[in-house]
Image (cartoon, rainbow, N blue to C red; front, side, top):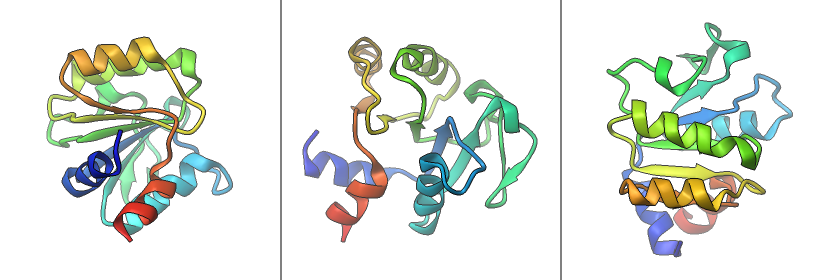
Length: 139
């Protein structure tokens, strides 16, 4: 994934589902979700234990399949263990028709899930963080 690829992702993405979102402000998923929101992205939090709560004015959903069809998710940002990624990618591909990008956070790597997402025509970023890459690339 080149810097130009990442720039295109940042420029074309509008809505991001954060899978593995935590309501603890000290957790990385919370910090990244807040950061993305300050950059103008709509952030849809996903966590079954927090479903029905709100974060930054958005409902928290139990899973990707629970996100209403009217919310056009462009990117899924995954804060889950690497072995959980195939399940997340499968659900994303099945339930998010506008999805363009699968993003796996720092330390999250699953080559098989990445290959499946790429095979479905999606862009894949692994082992990176948008909170780190955005300022570096977008200024």
